Image (cartoon, rainbow, N blue to C red; front, side, top):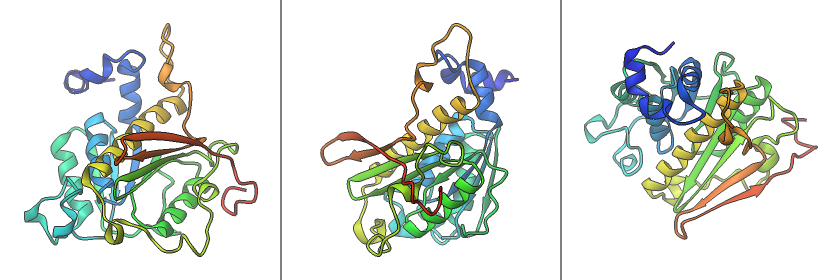
Length: 260
């Protein structure tokens, strides 16, 4: 049940038709993992905290550098040298002190334990980490929201292959090849900070839509229009140089090593 402070804090969400108190209670009950506290992870964490995801864990073993500050909006100049996950934990709690936030100074690997989480946000900046996150999310039947951004462009994938075998996983969309072993990331390609925030906003919005759908959120007399279609069969592409958003229909790879 939402208390009086919750009703005030989340008032602009619970008045939205088809969300209401029931939807907010679902968000508060969720346990989410944010892998990476950089350009994507910072706005993802802040928006998740503001939206009322009740239990947030952040993993990153990297430290804040001056060159991060054009896009990693939770970090500040006086925090250079500090751990990114710890910095983001502090900022999330400043946004919303009523939720649980925990940071861990660790690297995601094949043995990482993700069993307790309902949602995983892939906010990493290298493809090898994305393959590892995708594999564990599939094996543990977790909702995975993957984002990436470079220069003026970004993309979002909603991955539910472990929850429904008809949906593709990350490796279905981006098969492992010698070409994609070379990272095209912010460090070597550049990035406009506002692009990462825009992609992160899409990630959080998709997480809200999907988790309400998975929890069969249904208010009597309402149409739940925003839950009627999943984007798990699409790759969402954003081009900031042209201000265009496109969705590409995806097919499951029946020969994928991860999800088949």
